[in-house]
Image (cartoon, rainbow, N blue to C red):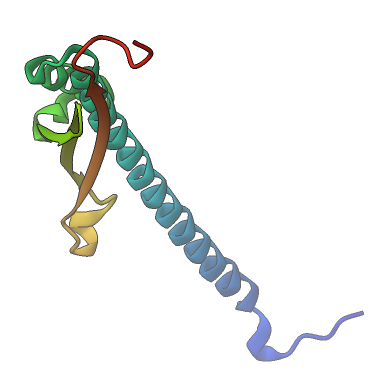
Length: 142
């Protein structure tokens, strides 16, 4: 038989409520971090594919179009908020010209519950670089 003290009668309910609040806050924080990571991965895929398309086709317009298409696929209605730029640079190395395509992008990730917590948005950035070289007389084997 257990004897209760006068002050212990409602303590189990208080402990349960506090535990539920802590677990809910932990779950919401985990969801916010997961959404942030997902947006970062999607932005990295957008800039990587844009740079890859330019390296394959040697056309900046084609690369930017590919990046915009992927942004629409990953970000949906917010695809217009993706800032994407592609740049080609060339360096002469002996008898060959080395070219580098660099695609950079940024996206404003809205924090889960940001208005409630007073947080706005986090600006995500991504960059991808592809390089290739052109030989003056065909393939490197001759």
